[in-house]
Length: 611
Ligand code: F6R
Image: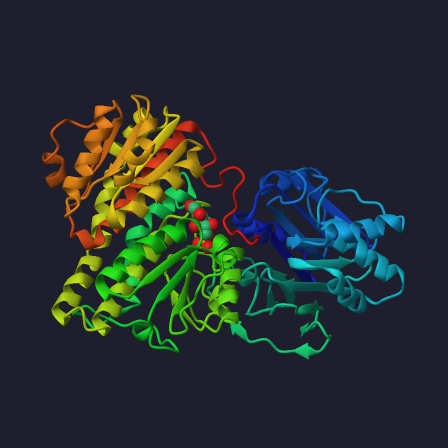
């Protein structure tokens, strides 16, 4: 996690640009922030603050600082609490460093340096990088030689940026495991954790490969491998109109804005796959025939994992292709048996999640063919996979994933239909019918958004006062129950659990009493009678039932539920896309009523780049 940025110019003060870059990187962590620049005398000047970027901005306005070269950091704490002392940059008199990742052998290096009389000011793992660099510079090495020596000592995953005292013409960056992009701008060079931060400053961008390091001067950026050999890495031009909208467009929160963008995002994602008007789908060119795979092995984390669970239902149902789904953090450690004729698919909004990336590399080492489904085009997962399916959600700033999830579902639904058609299981008219159902989703979503006041009232009166909430779903909507519970937990800090409705009688029913709201996702499909029995079991124990379903289902209820959210009646195939919105809205409003930090919930970060 953590976001890093470094900027070098001849003419301007870089502090406003670093602050702007940090704002764009804040989704990566918001425990503390800091920056360092070289003042006119070439001395290192630091400003750091515990808390969000706004706290750092206050510090700087109270005690201004400026310079033409500098580095910045926004932190998600791993080693040591989120104090100012542990905030980056970590520095000595000769060098300042910002770090994203974990230096796994920092204790060993620290002991070594302590034994040599070195003193440490922080509890971070990152400080060893600054102290080691200082030591090598003090011994007479050049910054470039010292960088190679430091990198040779470090183990773990990291991206680093070093700023050197008395060297206004130099920044050095390095990467192993964590991403680092380099940008060439107009009379400016920069580096940073992602294209969001570097893009607005650059005419072209290149990404470092693992174990690369880069020397930025006012003239150019030279990328080198671990042996010191200069290499070229492919660069891509940045659209001159590239801008990141950091505004909330009048919405109270990014999450609310992003939930409202879902009709558009689903339509945009679908339109990249549509060929002609009839409803024929065409996936992007892939270097293998996906439909001929004997098995699909999907690996992901969090909300992306729940999307994969829905994908399993769809793909097995429509394409009769066996699908395994795994949590990336568990995958490598269970010695998975991979089918040589199988394909592995990695789903991730950010394309940078460390566990998912590690799983991809594991599959690569086992000669699997690799497909990524990501929302960030040049992310590590996209670059390291053999082929990519790209969702069109655009940048998502709310830490809780919303529009990226529905975009993933859209892509998976389209993938299932395409595979079914290519495997001869779906006729052309049926393919067109299914695609039409998907094309109608944006309109249904727009209608659900008009029901926000109903959902808001339920959140306020039933969900927000609760201590525990259960979500029940069956079949392809069981993952939506899991997603609903995750959203509620992470946003409102209310304990919630998602269950397959049929499982409730095998244990969780013991939790139910009149204080426990039970959200029942009940589309009127073939499983409706079954879920009704589960609902009765809850009601018999006094549980407060929140019915989520269509009018036809509601009319079949024997008793009035505690509350109801009536949704459009749609074909069973597309119900997961329909249920996604109300479960998001329910959690959102509960969080608003509880007064939590909706866009940046405590302890979280959007891009989880540590294992
Ligand atoms: C929850 C959420 C997380 C992410 C997870 C994976 O709202 O956003 O659970 O889904 O951290 O992130 P990506 O999709 O970027 O790999």
